[in-house]
Length: 381
Image (tube, rainbow, N blue to C red; front, side):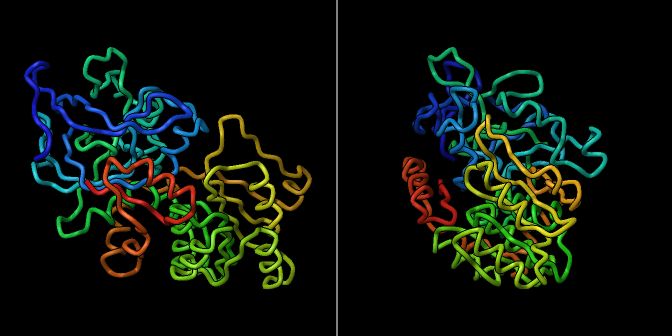
């Protein structure tokens, strides 16, 4: 097992992780101290972590981050220590981290909306429910926040069992890590948020690590026309391999194609999965859908970004704009479901990992993402 317990601070572990100290900025690989797990907590040795765009939003300053921040929120690993009086878990268990925890007790969990669990209100600050910070920087008195409470860019991390999904040991953790964010967010945006029905016409705007799974979800839901939109040829080509029936570089082309196959009506749904949400993305998607159609906004914009649509068209055409967090997925059931689909060959994951990186290569991984040469980069520990 990598890492070691330290004597200077009783019970803490010394490990390495990617930390953001300023924004805009870059990830720095530094030594981190991790506290031992308390009740209902797990110490996990990481195996793989996806390089999701959401972490890069903090790096670029698109989203305000609690700094310093131990990054990463899409990962999988092995349990190496279980907190006292924590039933149902054992050393050696394989786990996928859900970036959205599910307590199972609040109003949202009880009504089948685990993606809106009240525990999520602590994720922005990177602390636990009691306000404590469980990772630290040696010799630094500042709080070290954990990205979504899980910090998957660390060789070892400490997580709450509410964010842990046990998975079979014969499943590749390199593929399984993607289900902790990207797969469920994209797939659910189509299946749950857009509520696609057989025969529908669907536009997916942005076909990166999230949108590519919205394409898969639209295909699984039975859409007759799945129209992928992305300026990068690699992503359009991959969209065709996972279910897109047509692919275009611009929304104008996609909208005209949708109308030509719907007697001029437009798409039943348009799902916005662009890397950084801009106001005109929603405006274009809104113009592309038919009466009573749905725009699903999954992409995240800068904190001051606002959207603009025609008010009369919104009312008189009865159009709907639907936000989507984790594709309205329920982590405890849907991650297991997606992995079953993967094992059965119904969900493509392996082919979407374009390249793996070491932890020390994390900034190169994000540079490749911006350059458009990756579908999904993955850190392999």
